[in-house]
Image 1 (cartoon, one colour):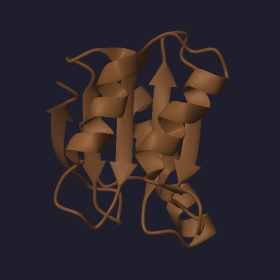
Image 2 (spheres, one colour):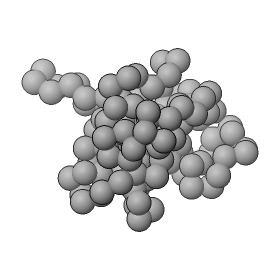
Image 3 (cartoon, helix red, strand yellow):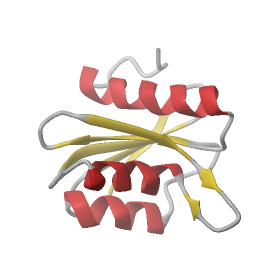
Image 4 (cartoon, one colour):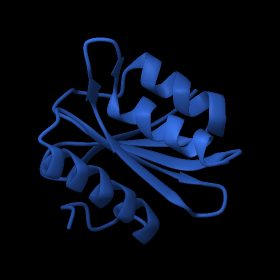
Length: 117
């Protein structure tokens, strides 16, 4: 469970999913997105010799590959201070500029919420 009690339950869910992927797979970042129908997609960092993707871009790609046409929200669990411009751009491409991106630390505490814009 995340340490941010004032989060909407659906936002808490994607933060928890992102945190779980990060811990389970031992990757630097975990991310999750929620599409327009409420389905969620969770992913970790991909670091192959021939393919490198952040967790958030991987989660967006999973949503697109599964037929999502929009996003309601995104979350990333990371030690970084914020979501990168490239990560926010991927969320913006599918969800639009106003899509919230929750940035949480490894303990699940949301440090900031930014828009994809």
